[in-house]
Length: 362
Picture (cartoon, rainbow, N blue to C red):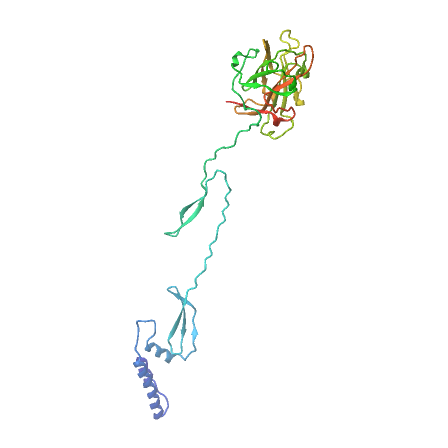
């Protein structure tokens, strides 16, 4: 109101009285209009006083926009109108579209693993949790079946030693039989002609073998690589059972070894061992201890064979391919392999997969 009074008092214009009167009427009209407006100071809209002040100090303007501002989560787009009022057009806040990012997880399947489980794990935001996949594993339990060829029964050698003298009484009952005819079965007249039982043992140095042979006629006139042409024992030994399990031909870890007690009555020929295969071991093996005796219905063979001669080792639970056989000659003063019986009926000299299996018991 004071601005209007100042304006009237300062109207020192060089005009006529009629013009002065007309101007006064305009001013009074504006004043009346201003007084008629209700002054509001409790809202966001300016009162008449402020509006009139802007009219007197500024020239009319076209609507203009001011920079966007936010208030209470709403975008405001204020616009000044020619009447001096500020109009605001609320615009909703743009909502960001959130795309969840999936994190690839690589899980290496484990045979004994249990299924994955979801475990809630708290995040930084209060009251929320995310599910994290964690693998729960069961203890690994060995389930592999030990190697054994499907030929005959599994032969077990207990840990023991033996006095090598041809006397088998310390062995007790021999648990395994040699009775499968694998060469010239037509020459075998029965169990009294050619059959046998045997037992095995081992320690860190030797494989021990005890054989009791039933034979109605004992003949051995040969030595060296010809001992198989008389009454004798043959052992086939596969030192690498796991590596050769499906290999049906001989290789460097397969051994063919013969044992002959010679002529116990005269000592000539003497008891001896011989290796035919492999060629690198061929000949009389070093360190073999061998003895035997003639009995009322056959003969005995007792031997301690060094593991070095067999390319094996004396360790508990070791497994080897193994066949033991008996050659028979019933014609005195001759050299002839007339028949052969074995511990497995499938025995073939050149095919280790046809042999049986020996395990060294603890």
